[in-house]
Amino acid sequence: MTTPDEIRPDDMRPGEIALPFDPAERKPDAGIVFIGRAQTAWTEQSGCPRNMGQARERGNRAVIVIDAAWRAGLAGLAAGDWIQVLIWAHKARRDLIVQAPKHRDKPVGVFSLRSPVRPNPILLSLTCIAAIDHGAGRIDVDALDCLNGSPVIDIKPFIASADRPDGLAGNP
Amino acid sequence: MTTPDEIRPDDMRPGEIALPFDPAERKPDAGIVFIGRAQTAWTEQSGCPRNMGQARERGNRAVIVIDAAWRAGLAGLAAGDWIQVLIWAHKARRDLIVQAPKHRDKPVGVFSLRSPVRPNPILLSLTCIAAIDHGAGRIDVDALDCLNGSPVIDIKPFIASADRPDGLAGNP
Image 1 (cartoon, each protein chain N blue to C red):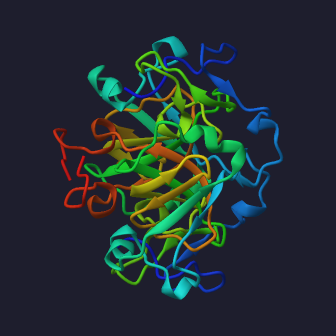
Image 2 (image 1 turned 180 degrees about the vertical axis):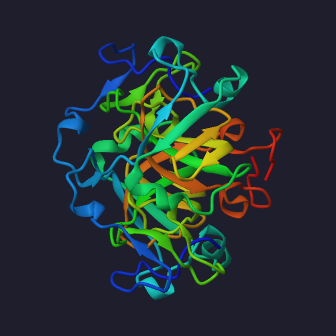
Image 3 (image 1 turned 90 degrees about the vertical axis):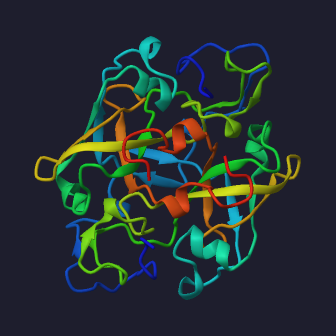
């Protein structure tokens, strides 16, 4: 429950702080390429789940379609695999450095939130492959919490020994 | 154990496939900004751990220094918090779509590997905050598996309900 309700193109809430510049207008330090798109049931901000928990509860599968140029990179992925999907939140503003989500009692820094509104609007979503068609570049997954049509920028395998803190101090 | 041994500026191994273009030379689809840098004990590719498990075993803490412009975004993070750190692997080539890491018995697609060599060379590292100085933008963490000086592009809180698959089918 750590993302705000909307991508918020214009409004600001009490206590929020915007940067004195828009990261989207700055000369980039590096460039990314889109490797595909996400197809989800969420076509409007107002109905988009705020996190993967909500996305799963609604029971809608989602699809990732990888563009032809990159499909050879899918070799080795199979149904049942858990993957970390990096999505570019292409409609999110990037300048709110302190935010006041409705579920938090006071404004907090963007780096303590999973809000899509952030300097580099990259979403991280852990999802499970339900089916994969390597030739078509199509991956059916159990859920995604992004808007329909969002660009995909990376897929990584979930590695339990790296991606979960069990056995280490803290152990969430 | 799913990353190759080096960032591999030039060489290719049997069975590897390079794209017919270099993503780094393409017109970017979006631009990212660097928000800080990682300070690690790993100054050479040859000695860089291949994953967070190896990085932890070696017992070297690491430091993230966030640039002044973005430090307000750290409010709400505290020692003991687990964070997902996104690092830009600035020295990694980006065109190897099929790779043959030494620990795999055959070449596989980049999206089934955690290799830093990928179309968008973004590393995902789950680490624990040992200490944080919000004013100085300094975060001491238990480990990082990237080269010293690597640009940081995002920090997100680890959210157990989103970032671990427990209780769902598959359950790694």
